[in-house]
Image (cartoon, rainbow, N blue to C red; front, side, top):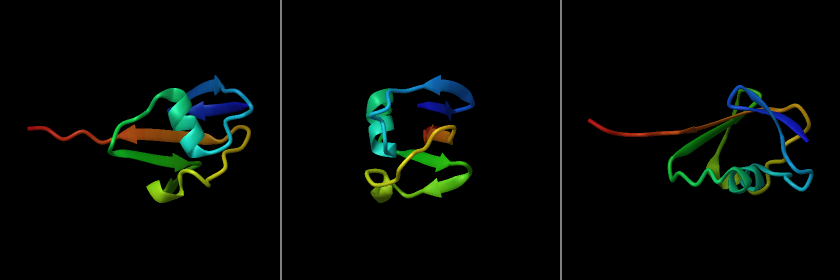
Amino acid sequence: MNLVINNRRETVPDDIRTIKDLLDFKKFSFPRIIVRINGKLIRKPAYPETVIRENDRIEAIHMISGG
């Protein structure tokens, strides 16, 4: 499947079907991560059931705090 992930065109295996699958595949395990699909914010509890589709634009941004 072809996706745009963080402004980069990428091909991921076809068995990647949900946001959770994608985050696991990419090893994005940050505790404070924000995900948007085609500009729409996806809440963390919805990651396991939110389906991704061919050519979706996905932004996965981890929040960092510091001083």
